[in-house]
Length: 392
Image (cartoon, rainbow, N blue to C red):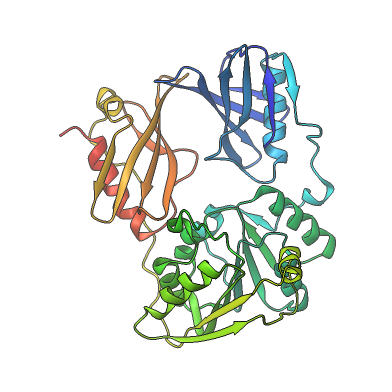
């Protein structure tokens, strides 16, 4: 992760602009004065950079919740903040903050809001979850120019590597997304996907709740798949295979295909390694044989609060609310340089929560810099959040 160490943090006047980078406000953690957030904008990218005080020095890095791709934006923000704040840099891993030649046109990398506000109209769509090196995704896209592909990955270096190859290969039928695939699937219109690839997902043997394959993901996959469309799992993990087989077969009705050590047209470098180790490779393919109803209308995430009591907001800090269908955990509270409060919350369903910030003053509240994903679960939890923010 790009970062620098500085001798001492210095507060500036906000907002300030430096070489096309705008720093809007500073937010200080109320309970832990060693942590600060700086609201930052570059082009259309809105995110926070974080300052973490350490013994005799401070660390400047990206905020994990709002981190953007590619890393060029984080590198540039940190560098420009150090300049505008006149910080003394004692160590840095930012060797080069120049934008890579292949990132000059980033049409392939989309934000979750792009899909949430207006999902592209595509005749034939395939989705790959966790594309890793991108070898399978790019091979499929190159050999099927009339089919559109969406690749989902949260590993930043993998995204950047795939973007470079998309540019080099001149591919026009691929979009990439840096987001949780389980949440993304709720945005996809019904009956438009011909394949969902889940190749070699992280087994998460010690945290099975984090697995991509679960009942909700299967339900959403079957909804978005067209008739004869397929959800394809490929794994070297005996545990993941057994778990997925049991999860698939718990469905009331299904068409399921199983292959073992079956070669496909392209394999990843990890698969090549596992084959040399003589590990078994399992393919489980769930076939959709029913048409699904269309998605419901968009959700509203506005805060319609009669009054906002900032003392009440402060009292929520570190509390957790549990209710039927989800939870809200008020993780951290910050005071901003513009006399507002910034709440960091985790909310949603227990198996796939979202982590968000909410900016508040006495007159209004809003998610910042991004709204929750447009899901039915989040709409329900949002209403619970409104109730929690209001004084009884």
